[in-house]
Picture 1: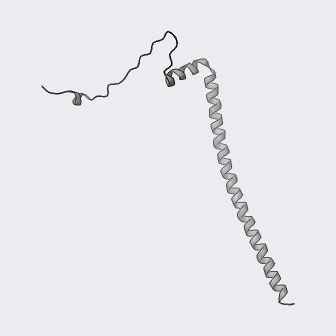
Picture 2: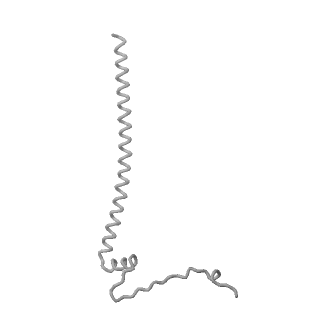
Length: 98
């Protein structure tokens, strides 16, 4: 009977140690995941603020018209559009001696 008590005690201490280790490991994982989620929330909050700013900007008709002209080549009725294409050919390649 004297031999069984120390064996049981050692087994209980080992079981408690293993349980404590797994709990600490799990806690560390939860802390890391919480930090990652906080980063995601920050990024989404920043994106939301930018989108809200864009919404406020495009609520003004003159800003919406300006963006439509720049992005979609929009022209109002009665307006004419002129497209300027820069000259990309170099002068030395296009000139030839006679």
